[in-house]
Structure formats: C-alpha cells, structure tokens
Length: 407
Image 1 (spheres, helix red, strand yellow):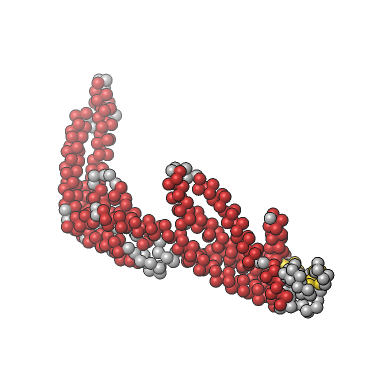
Image 2: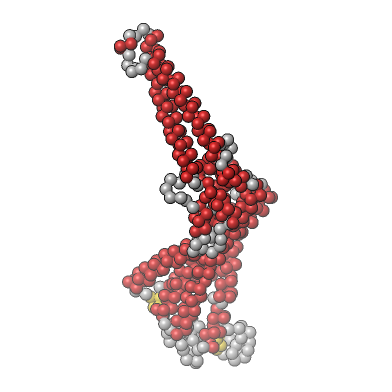
C-alpha cells in the first residue's frame, strides 16, 4: 500500500513538471506556479462569494439574536431597554422592516415573516414623541451623573474637613475650599435633586411603556409561540446552512473540474503537451479547495452534528470522543477515495484498453503505429509475452490477443 502511494506521488510530481515526458525549464515552471497561485486565489474568492449566495441564518432570522437576548435578561427594566434600543438611532429613521427586507437582495431565500412583523412593531415605536421622551430621559440621567460626581468630590473634602476640625486646625489654614457645614448642605441639596430626577425618569419610562405601540411590541415579544417558531427556524437554518454552502461550492467547482479533465484528456490524446500540462495543473488546483471544503463540512456540517448528538446521548459530556471518531474515520475515508480512484478513475486496464483501440502509447498516449513494439516518443514497451502461447500481447489487457488466454 505504501509503495503504491509513493508511486502515485512520483507519477503526480513527474506529470506536474514535464511536457511530453521532457522536463520543464525553470523559468517556465515559475510561470506555471505563478499562474497556479493566481487561479487558486480566484477560485477561493469565487467559493467565498458563492457560499454567501444563499441567505444565512442570521439574515433569514435577523430578529432572533435581539429577541433571544431580551428573553434571557433578568433586569426589571428590560422592557424599557428594549424600547430604548428601538429608538437609539439618532440620525435618519432606521426603517427596520425595509432594512430586513433588503437582507434578501442578491441572495437566495427569504427573511422570516415573523421577523418582518417584529420590525413593523419597531417602526411604529420610532416616532418623534417617543424620541423626545428618550432624549429627555438621557438629559436627566446626565444631570444625575453630574450631581453624583459632585457628591463624591464633596464627600472627599467633607471627610478631610472633619478631620481638620477634630485636630483643631484653624479654618484659614485648611486645604479644602468648602467647610464642613457648607459641604453637608451641598450634599443634602444634591441628594434631593437626584431623587427628583430619578422620580421624573421613572415617570417618563412608565409614560413610554404605556404607549399603545410600546405595549403591542412588548406583548409580541412575550408571545411564547412566536418566539419558539423563530428559534426553531433559526436552529434548523443553522443546521442545514453548512450543507447548503457545500452544495453551492460543489456547483461552482465541479464544472471547472469537468472542463479541466476533458481538456486534459483531449490534449493528451492529440499530443498537445503544454495544454495537457496546464490542464493537469488546473485539475489539481480545482480539486484542492473541493477536498478542503469537504473536510471543513465534516467538522461543522450535518455529519458532525449527527455524531455530536449520538455521543452526547450515549456518553454525556465526553465530547472529546468525537475527535477519536474523526481520527479513525478520516483515514478510512481517504483509503476508500484512493481505492475508488485506482479502480475506477485511473484504472490502468481501462486506460490501456482505450489507448490500444485508438493506436496510442499505453504510457504517454502519443499516436503510434499498430505494429510498434516500443513507443518512438517515450520508449515504453507496449507488449508482454503470453505465458500460454509465448506470443506478444498487449500489456494490461485481460486476455491474450493471439490465444485468448487470461492474463
């Protein structure tokens, strides 16, 4: 098995740097490598673009993250914070529903209707009166912050002044601008003002939450059935999205692989060495991202989720066992792929039969005469002695052309 793999690697590298079995000069090889790099970059760019063609779960359910955060919050004023979030845009009106609908532009798929309804409620909240309430609340909170900072400064000076007074230090020698009595009065005044502002803010919040559009939005958010529908749709979309991405990436790569393969076979059959070399490089380049994407899918796609669910159900938290599964599974998959390529795609007997029928060299596929024992282009011996009749018969074919003996 190892000898066969080594032979495959030698054949691969020999085929990648020779034209008609002649070594490629260094300058031409550098040009080929530069072309390979350029094409590979464009292939990955195309794969990235087509992988985002289908609408993603976050685009199909744009309200899920925000809605889920609301449901997981435990703060008492989370209703107000949700309304405030809808009014946080200070520039032009956000038009949430229109923005949600624009997510499907240039994509396959649609935005969930429940999220569009969610955005419609948010649009109704965004009016001038509600924005003015939020603006007033922010101003009052800014005043509270200023007063609280002033109180912290005053307390620092107040405590220092008390210590000076206990120590009997004269007032004119004090390092503090405000005396103890004055500081106490300022603290009490600021504290009363803070309480007034807090009550005012509380009234404004209640006023905002009492608005019909706010009440309808909060009631919508608290509807268990609607959220479960969004959550189910989002998780289902997330489950299938890697598979959809792999399908689109395969659609992008498979035509390129097929064209490169056909060109390579045609050029090899006609003896177009340079075209055969370039098409071979392209064939390899197109297979590289396909293999990488398949392995990436195995790590995050449906198969991974299937294994994850099975191991979670059987072994609980021992999820590291998934790594063991992959460590043993991937070599098996690689072995199966190599066997398939050896027996079906690059089967020597199949290739030899086609080349003999077309009067071509079994090795280099150049045109030769029917009775040529050795290829005049590469020197390869086309025949082998039959063990039964001892006449020459074609290599790699199942029966002797003279006596019909099985080889």
